[in-house]
Image (tube, rainbow, N blue to C red; front, side, top):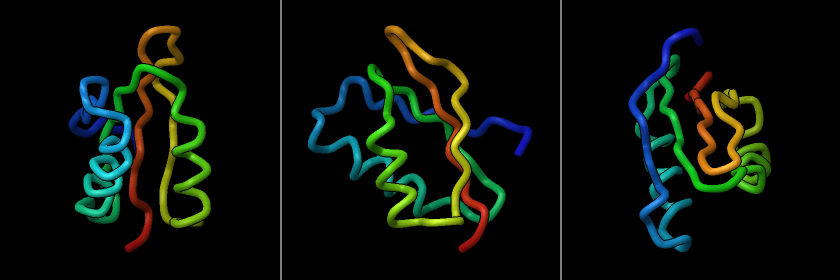
Length: 79
């Protein structure tokens, strides 16, 4: 995956709604598409949730590592 898709900036969302938005955005992707998650902290726990629920079906590439903004390109590899 060499291109960068649209950004999903969840920094202004309440924490309880963030994962819902992220997984809805991921769910709408077709194979080969991606989006860039913009967050105010390292989304490492989200990575573990993806790994548990979508093993082998996604890509996860850090584009920016904080300290104030983290950007991660999340892509779909299979449907």
